[in-house]
Length: 240
Image 1 (cartoon, rainbow, N blue to C red):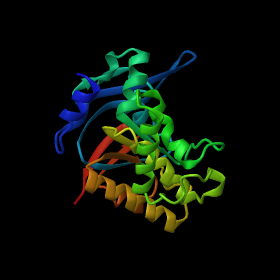
Image 2: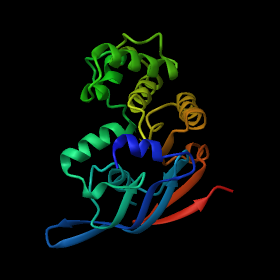
Image 3: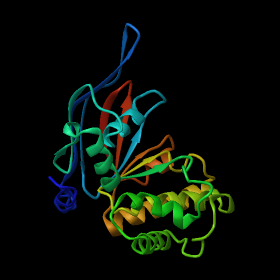
Image 4: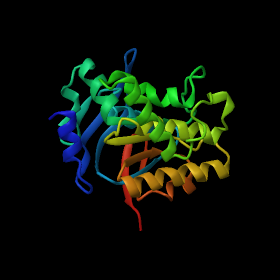
């Protein structure tokens, strides 16, 4: 299935992430260290899912597997019906750039670039012209309320504003799925609440699917569903 076909197939409510019997084991010398064990999970298009668990429970590993950054040891993983395990590294890079948006705890912005140029970066791997890229990046920044900060560099922005830039960058390619790893972990309570509000608004109005790793129960409470990992095993707790 092509990237365009996958996006068309990811209608709201349809299975988007399908994980079955997923396992990941790392080899450290002569020792095998299981990080994920028999994980089964389905996330539907348009859901906002919070992933919680203690440090070392496998949350980041699961996020990396869904993003195609790492490969599982056992089991299957499909995104919009596409088995990403069968893709070459080059195909994975292309698929990831078009299909996955990332929001990190520490923003990961390029300090020498403006907000507009940071958001434009993922589009440089497409066949869009520079004018088209800048127009789309500008629109993404306006969506997160930063239309007046296009030419500011990260050092000139607050933490909350930098995270808004990161969200705009994650959305600019119109991805199937947004993966957020502790997106409020480096923010004060007010800024964290604002960021969660923006993500939730994008989920509800634009239908964007979010998987958010968080240690904060208040952040998790904004999600539709809580998924808990403990020692590599998953418990799916539906929201009441």
